[in-house]
Each structure stands twice: as structure tokens, then as C-alpha cells.
Length: 417
Ligand code: FE2
Image 1 (cartoon, protein in one colour):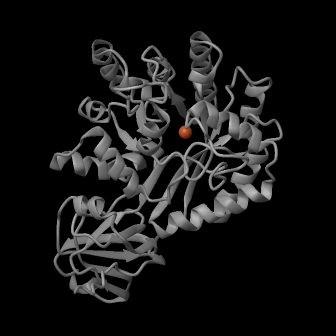
Image 2: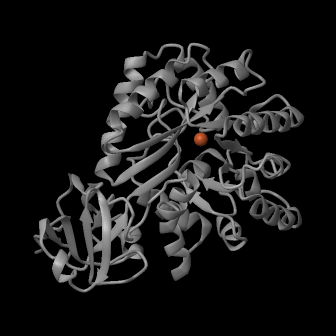
């Protein structure tokens, strides 16, 4: 007998009236129409009534050590990345490990309710005590039953610019952090930034880790660390496990240079994570008008064969006042700021917070297909475009076949004259 049978579901690829059979935490069958007779008996059966059943959302770029600290010790008045880094520097001196754990667990509950069940979070390794690393490793253990939490060792103040930065980052990896991060545009000079990319990629290659680097999070059109990351990833055989995050400088780069850069990124197998909510609010702050939006060239990268995901990056922290762990909100903003308004473009924005993000995170067995993990979300929408348009309610969230969250359907009650 099956553990779970979902019937009359619409899938993200548009197939409708589908039955999804689950046993032992895995999808064992996806069929059009009713499930096969032998499998029709299930401990739990749910009629999706034509609504969208999607694989769970994935956030390939987040900062869980700073989340839910908005306003502490004060609000970011300039709205810039640099003031955010300065504020975080002040705040982290006062943080306690239990506070980081408590806030991160609260965020993970928000995430589960929104069907966000895989998160790649950067964790600041600039503090030599590595308190935030210990805190998020504890969170990773505590949420393992419902969220796949990947951690990236992130030298927020620059791995070369911070005394002992390399040592702290390596110790974080020794403690069990999953991937190597970096912030080359915050090193002292362009050449030190490039040297940090090379060094960090070498550390990742030596240890068999993924690398996920904040790259060129600036409006400076000459910030070109993504080029170095692509080169080093290729040189060191990191294809498929190297990611460049943000890449906002690509918004401002010369078109002729970009025409060479995009094929280089595609050739290197480096994935790109844009963070639309944060990129459009932090960038362009030195402009008058026209005011740059700072969003990387997502549709052009996708057309060039690069895997592009959209991440949330921040929720209620020194860089961003808003957010609610809602990856559809991220897709919605990404769609607008990239003008990906064609039918295919809107579908690609949904992919950017589901399948593309899963690919960048290296998730195995992800999707709605036989053999995949039965971790999926039922949305109050008929298809992916409607899901984005309505920022659809997550009616039910299953993790490996177990129902872990439910939200009642939204139905307006009118009392018109
Ligand atoms: Fe970030």
C-alpha cells in the first residue's frame, strides 16, 4: 500500500490530471489520470483538484546568521551594501550564539510554511571565534528533518583583508561547513580580489568542496571577478560546483565585453545566482537619474547556456528590511526587473527558484518524477504563471511524503453595497 497518493495535480511543465504515488519518502510513480490499480490504495489520498504541485522551493543564496536582526543596532540609513557591512560589523560584536540559533530556527519555520525546504546560507567566518559557524551548524542539525541547509564559509570582511582570515575560513571547513565562499570586490584592490578568488578556488579544489563566491556586488563596470572565477573554476576542475553570486556589475558592463564574458562563464560551468530583491535596493545608490537597477543579465546568461537561480539573500537584516522566506516573491521581483515577461520568461523565473536553484545547490533526486524525493508543495494556482501572479498560497507542504505545513486557501469574503 502507498503512503501517499496525490491525484488530479497539475505539474510545473503543464501536464494536468496527474497522479503522484509516494512510498518510503520517495515518488515511485507519476502517471496521467488515475494511478495504476495496484497502487491505488494509499494510507493518505489527496485530490489536488487541478492545482499546481511543484517540487519544493530552493534558495541558493541566503545569510542566516544575520536574519531577523533588522534595526539592530540601528537602521541602514544610506541603503548601501557598504553601510550594511559596517552595521553587521557593529552588531556581530554583541551577538550571542543562542540568539543566532533562535532567529535562524524562526526563519526556518517561516521557510517550511512557504515550501522552502533547501537553503544555501553563507555564514560569516571573519570572527576568529567562529561563533556564527557553530550556531548555524547547530541549526543545520536541528532542522535536518525538514530543511536541507547548506553552509558556505563566507569571509564577510575579505579573506585577505582580515587578519587570520584564511585560517578562520579553513577552520570553519574543518568544522563541517559545506562550501567555500569569498567576497573579492571587498578586498583592498582588484588584484587582491583576484588573488582571493584563486586562493579560495584552490582551497575548494584541495578539499573537494563547492565554491560559491559573492562576485562583483557593485555598480563598478570594471569589477570583473566573475571572469577570474570562471577561469579558476575551469583550471581547477570545479565545473558544476562553482557559483558566482550577485554579479551586479554585469548590469553596468560594456556590451562588447559581456559578449565575450557570457560564453566564458558557460564554458566554465559556473552557475550564477542573482538576488533581485536585494540587488535592486542596494545598487544604484550612487546614481542620480537614470538610476541603475544592479540586476545581473539573467535572461542573456540563460540564453547563453548558464544555469541562473534567483536567491533571497537577506530577510530583515542590516541590508534589507523586508522579506518572508517567500521564493515566489523573489521570482516575482526577478521577473519584473529582468523584464522576463514572455510566457517562456515567466516560466524561467519559476525555474530560477526551483529546478535551477536545486541544480546549483547540487541537490540529488529533486523534482516531480519517479525516484525523486517526495518533497513538494501544493499551490493555490492553476499553473506557474498564476503562482507568481498571485504569490500563491502554499496549501500543503510535504517533506519526504510527510505533511509538514498547511495554510488555508485564500478566499475573499466580499460585502459589496
Ligand atoms: Fe549575499
